Image (cartoon, rainbow, N blue to C red):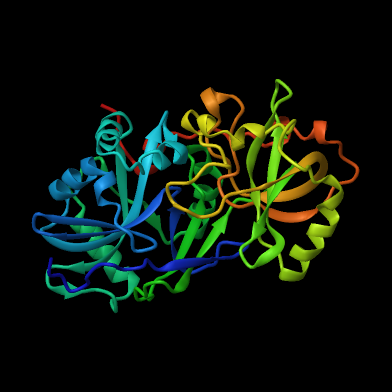
Length: 363
């Protein structure tokens, strides 16, 4: 491979802001795997946000990109999986599997799509120093004949339309809106764009914690909600604390520590057999490898309020979703009982078909 912008490339990033800023280009914020696609003739490389290769996990995309991209280019975008008209991050995550046979099977049963939103190089020319408005023009022209599963991300310079997208597109599983200055060059790994994400609050049960990598202080709190059957389901973690607060939490949670997980609602996390049938938070992650995921069980008696942006898809349209990203601590809720922390408090988002977002016409 010999391109003017060579892999690995870390993508340009965005910082969070509360409101949609004026005078920019606006796009939906996709909930998938960020990927930089390098194509040089027959060679295709899908690079992740960390620089690791995703190519082997998405063989169907490799062929689709060869059919839809020019011979030599570097494109920034998002790998997504669509299920029942909305993005499905859980199904996308299952695509990262070490077994080649499983990769081949999933490529057929849960095929991925690629949504392109920036152009870093075309032919022999690097576009890293080219203003966004010109890169977008070139990208639009380049993908004018592209067909699914390769898509051009919708974009607008109308802030009123961006606000409408922010409110409507969440029903299709999108995260929010990204705002990009029109004269912005492409700067890998720099937070020069802006993201506006949905935020809600929920009261959750603290049922355990993990230690911080630096020592015997809290690294993350393990959060739970009760389902309709009275079962405490793990829904995510809360992890962003100042170091002083991490130490304080150890003392505050000490009275609730259990000597072992026996009798805890999540005792199965310690059973290796359980990990074969469910992706439990006590199991090793395909992303984290050998990272220590051991946890300290707590009697599920304390309640806290956390902020979250969105949920993963619920099982069969019912309960069982999790916070898609790390939740953010707000406060203790001594006025709430653990049993009152149920899925019922979570806001239901009005559905919106992803084909509508991408402008795909029915056949």
